[in-house]
Image (cartoon, rainbow, N blue to C red):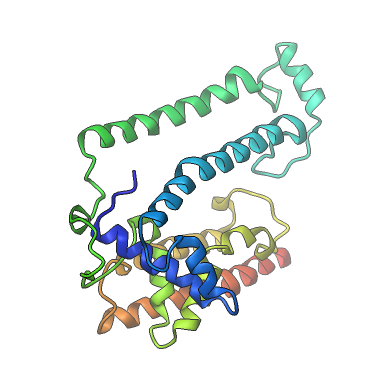
Amino acid sequence: MLPWGQMSYWAAAVITNLFGGIPVIGADLVVWIRGNFIVADATLTRFFMLHVVLLPVVIMLVIAVHFYSLRIPHVNNAYGEELDFDKEAEKYKAGNKKESKVIPFWPMFLSKDFFVASFFLAILFYLTCYHFAFALDPINFDPADHLKTPPHIYPEWYFLWSYEILRGFFFSADLGLIAFGIANVVFMLLPWLDRSNVVAPAHKRPGFMIFFWLLVIDMIILTIWGKLPPTGINAYIGFAATIAFLALLFVVLPIVTKLENKQ
């Protein structure tokens, strides 16, 4: 699950070193996370417990809250329409299913969740059993060696976009660390950054639709350049994409959503 290879080892070293930038407690925090002064066996044990015990428990709690919110406050809808759920449920039970705006949790709602989960699990099991190395870096097949640093260190592909933001400010490690921290929490702030009173699907909000696709394109660029060495023109492209990411979320999105309120 956690291969003890060259790229994993040095990526763990880079990521844990990031916490050293926190004022006052940074150095002690790095040692506490690693369980040692360097990335060692204790670090692997702690990371294993994080992935196998702590994160699954947190995910199960989130799923429990999700199901609770579906049953008690009830599920929302794309148009923000206020519904009398009891009245709509009575319509459904009376056989007037076409006019009813609700469906039963079981089997209608939950069966769709099972189908989607089963579909992606089938893909996961296929890749795991027949193409387990499809997303692994070739360098990671080399045993971890703390005396030999790879020429270019990068994380797994799904972290490349935030990693590129970290090193986007190539002229200032502190600015890069601040931008990296912001990038990893900014999506939780979207309800406050989206100032629009319009509640509708994205395709019915033209300005928001443009913002969304620009953000997707920018994150693809960040992901691609996150795996390239940050030298020459690559460093400037990464810097531009990082600035664009922050500008889209903290400047463009509030402006677009405020303009929607004036329409």
